[in-house]
Amino acid sequence: EESERHLAYHIHHLIRRMPRNVSRIAVVFDMEGFETWMLPYIHRCVNILRLHYPGRAGAMCFINCPSYFTAVWKVISPWLDDEIRSKVFFAPKTVNDIEKSIMYLNKMNLKTSLM
Image (cartoon, rainbow, N blue to C red; front, side, top):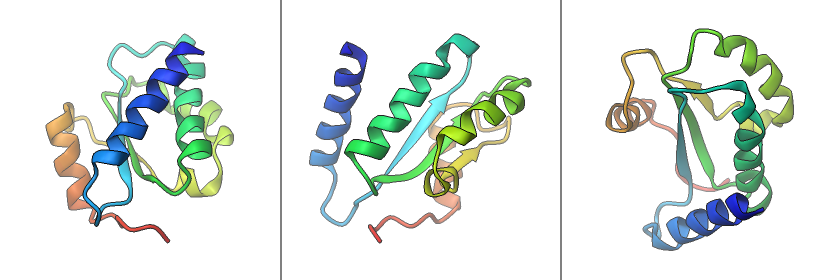
């Protein structure tokens, strides 16, 4: 599908531009305006990262989640293996843009090297 190729293209070029001492990426999902019909797209995004770039996901941070997203997470989480689930973070409501999400993730002191 075209959107999958588009995403894989961007991930590939992001990885090529990363400094040599960085091996993992953080993905920020801004859930503002989220609707349940978007679930398959999120699933495909995570699968592309998991299947084609194993070990590259350092963190997946969800920001601006609607109040009902807790119920949606119960649907999404079984799609993910334990390793990926352990890298998922839900930022507090005060973390509502990309700059704040970067600061939030940096404060967590996440691992950045491949295992």
